[in-house]
Image (cartoon, rainbow, N blue to C red; front, side, top):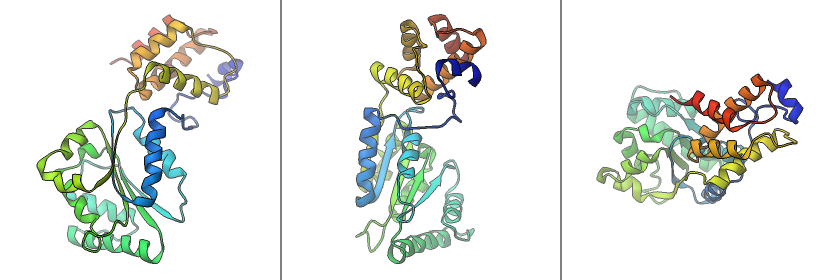
Length: 267
């Protein structure tokens, strides 16, 4: 496929999940990254919500890659459907601690390690929990305790909960009012509009080296409309469209090729 794409100047398929990545500065990303940059100095709890495929994890990945690793320790937790005891065992392991079967021991050890990092090493821990919408109410309730230092007078870490919009609904429950009151950053990602979606496609292709137009105006419209402004869906459609383009040995992604790609990813 790459050999065929080379005729258009493309060095690789930029819509493939394993391809080299770069941040496309859409308005939503700029807004989110600005807030995350501010969070580096203010610390506290951040909530990032949005429907699947809007790029929450991508934005977090680029933000963390820009951080000075001598000043921040990044903990990434992706198992959000586990029990509260399993959660603390996993978190203790990520901090490099010996996990215990006791929640209390793990909790105390994690807080002690956070204090050690901040006070002795001048390192700020960043805990990122992906798919946080699946967290149990017990774990959510514990976050206000995990972030409580010096009788709740200091913030010593950054805790980021990232998930779908159901996370926002869960935080509105009365049982989570104490956690909600401690949130210092709350950002909801939006769908791309049509001009942003086209900019996203063009930027990806340009990054991969494209030196000519390979998409008809009709195909653009079909791809953008079918994606509903979700970048993951655009990636899937464009990945298939480029594959079909190569298979047909064509020079242009037409509306027929676009529709074939759309149908291929439809379930």
